[in-house]
Image (cartoon, rainbow, N blue to C red; front, side, top):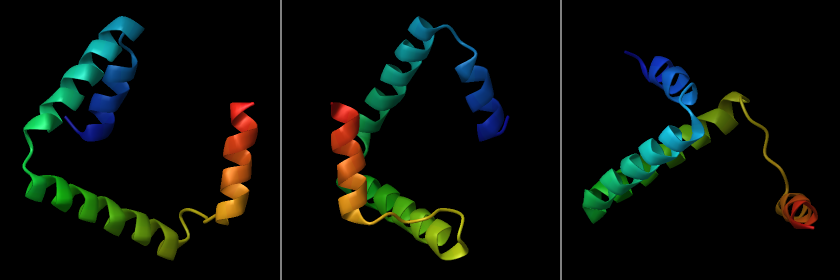
Length: 74
């Protein structure tokens, strides 16, 4: 089963079951070593960099992002 297939299946679960699954998945990350966590963050940074370089995502100036976030909180 691919990640996309698993995601589709999980999203079809009722909210209570999804919440329990999310909690269990998050708790499973507590067992990672600092080195493993660092490696995951480096991988995430690489993926985000590739998305920016390829044009798959657009960057937003910080002030604009903060302004939108503040407006959403109101």
